Image (tube, rainbow, N blue to C red; front, top):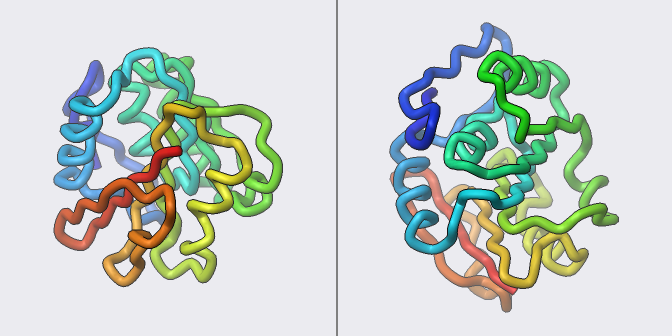
Length: 177
């Protein structure tokens, strides 16, 4: 797992053994950020990273100039790894909060320019995520929601669905308000 762009391009993440996560592939990250750089200005944005895992996407956003990245992760050791990595890279943009995403989404405490969601592919509530996020005021009016998901999940009927992109086994669905 590595950072594919920005000030930390090429830096590798080497988590200790025993941490469980399914990181977004470098190929899919590169493709996603090619889309994003043509669609929005990443410098200075606020990002909410839900189900952040080991923090690869949070670090990628910080590497590309996001000034605030809130990473929500339930697994304590995964969150600690991200905190330690951000600290060792002298990053002040990333904050890590240990919480259940579905509990935290019930009541917003901030709005974000971009929300990236990478739930476990087999999570039984994966299809409820767009509505939970978009109807509860988490996304700024001109913001962008991106959900990474398996190919079996189809969000295209959601009224805020914008587009779908597939990179091998990784699927991204984009939503706007």
